[in-house]
Length: 435
Image 1 (cartoon, rainbow, N blue to C red):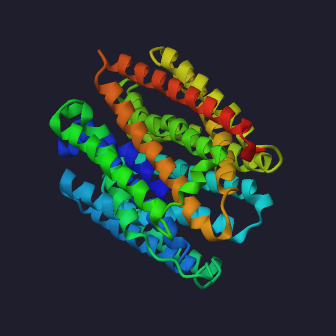
Image 2: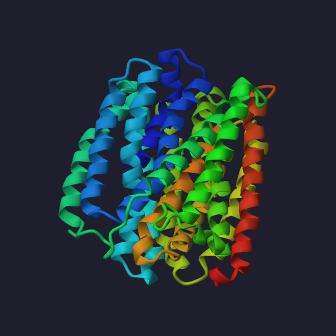
Image 3: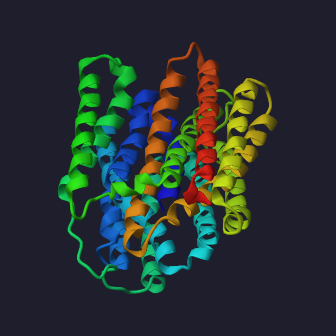
């Protein structure tokens, strides 16, 4: 559900921008608002999954997501659309975390990689379906229907959940209290950081609002750490981060996946403004990338990560993604579509190996009573990376000398980010916990 929605919205951003008469920077808030709320609420919802009935909470996520989709389709201006995306994101956060929780809760550890490979493929299929459908709807109907289409899909998904997910009581034997102070402080810290990153270029990095936002992030983060150390039942057990393998893996997640979100955000603009494609044809091009991603993750990567150290696969895969980004940065000005297709196949293969292996590696650190908490941390890291990617790629693109230089500079940054993730993955291999 969430991946279909993301891909449909990305495809339609240029059309929505024209309809609302907004800039590329303003249009980015349609994506960023969704990612902000996802990022800021996942740790809390992850904790709740360790407390409540998994099935009921998952269904509640669908209901909120469907309601948010309806409001998005009825939006008459950018402000209303962004607020509706916030509602949609609350449901999306519950759905994203629930998928990871159910894999680790209902399957044996020696099948985690296989399951995460399928889960990654299903996400990619959602993107694959969303891109061409989003392009078709945008061209032949209107962009509002990219949100309305979530309603029947969501209702069908609820029926499937009722049929397939086991009934259970609260997962833990001992009752867990919600760490409200930690939840509020973590949200305030992340909101301060991400808003500052998004507005820093527009308002000036040394402007008073941006300085105050960064200061707020530092203060909220410091108080959060102090409170979590003292809490008998914290939102996040900071002891997780003493495990170098876990720390390096999460850090690699944040740096690696910026290329995924940055590519998803900028490629529709590149294919439409430089290559002259219509929205429906853009969707077909992106289908190449997501199709390769789905096949690799479901048929190869997941099962492979059950047999060898997942960190080794992550290191090799993200190294490949780095060179794919560098390749595209030097070929994007050439005529024809062959280099675009090569890039999509190359990047899709690389990230198809990285994602399920990375998820497998992280979730192996979870105990039965911390499955939701670890899932929340993983999902927060993924969506933090997505937000960073959109913010940084948009900033680099919009402040280059011309359009082509903007695209080239953005993907050179993607090469740098993937290279950093490669070193972090190698560091996790050397750590004792990854062996």
